[in-house]
Length: 374
Image 1 (tube, rainbow, N blue to C red):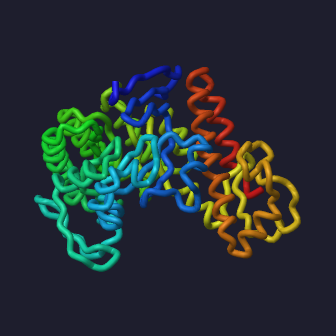
Image 2 (cartoon, rainbow, N blue to C red; image 1 turned 90 degrees about the vertical axis):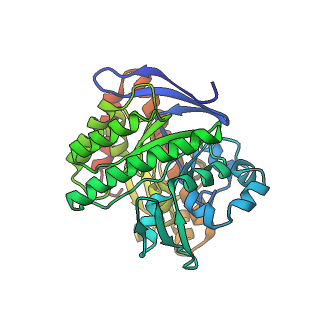
Image 3 (spheres, rainbow, N blue to C red; image 1 turned 45 degrees about the vertical axis):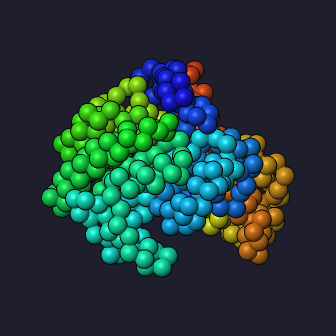
């Protein structure tokens, strides 16, 4: 029962479902949004605050943690949960996207990836087996294999290479993972961009390897929205019903709702926390850019319909004052609100699926989307 996924309810008229994923560090109710704590922390918040907002799981990044503080320190501290004092589930991203995006001299071969550390330029070569070993040492509950991500758009030959290498590396990763006899879960990552034949091929090849869950990679990076959603629809049609599905890096609420309708269970994105630090806040009446002068004497809470600590205790005027003065408290209070807003939306989605009212919930979300800055 430590690593088991069960579907608990389904919505009529769509592929939306609620579920429970059992892990060694607790049960995750899905659909779920994972706050991104690449370095083992959500910027500006303590873990107690994050859990108090209702976070069930946090995403960490194996690439960043491998470089700093390094595996020896994490192992010596008893693994990542002990090191960061987080007793709930963790999902570790392999860092493939960061390797390709942060190092200008990345070299991809059949054997693995050669790149330079973005910290000090140290030359590093990682194989799929190395990446599994790194994440096994880190100790996250869910780990991701090394995949070959290519940007959109890319030439067809490069897209085909992406799918071929991703499948080859997935097989090697699964073999290595089984050798470790770990109680973690290894999820496969499907590639293929919006090319339906390549995406279907990638899914078929990964499903044959029988991963504990499946992620959709290489989406939400500039492709047409209609093609993006068609690809999600195609993917969930062909992925196993009894395994969790994870749409990587997607953070706009309207996209999350659309993907939930298509049968996706897991989401992550830096959007709510990064925007919070930049003074952009999401509310039930639209987006607020708190630095704008019109909030200087606004005594209202940020969102009168929100139950987060920020909205219960502080005015827009005060939040603007903190942001204008570059106070650390600004990032804290803004992040508390944005993260609560996202987690509350996901709570609402789960409730709507259970009570077969997702269409009404989606209509409410679309109304928020249409609102101009309040």
